[in-house]
Image 1 (cartoon, rainbow, N blue to C red):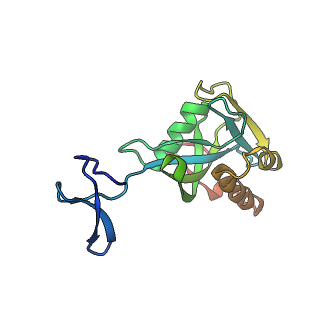
Image 2: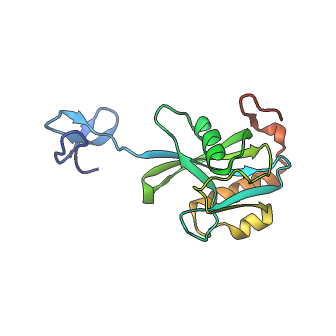
Image 3: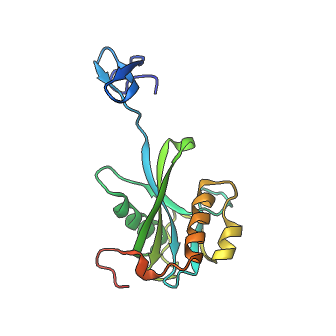
Length: 178
């Protein structure tokens, strides 16, 4: 960040107690910590944990994981449940937080989850998705966009599943019946 979000003045680096050099706006007299978006991505699994939902979006032919931004005032778990319902028409019955990673191209902190859907019925997918399909673990590993953050998350998740994770290992979604 080079300019103040409030007044537009050029920022200078200034020592901020315990934080090191932080962008500072002299006219506003305020430190301006970096601003970024927060989003979640998820490998949506079926109840048997042997199939993964991958999507195509924005006219691209590459398969990726379902993802969406966390709204102001919303926690990541609520965003996860909302986005899976909005985009794929599926209810999340359980989930597990995996890890996070900063994604520079969109200035976004990505929070990655594994989630389990109530059904494999894709009749409710929204027009936000070009296509959605269920893949076996091996098929998903082959189909995912190579070299992508989605692939990195997916490979971590597949490794965890192959170690014998069960549905009972996940956090149940509020009101869901496992």
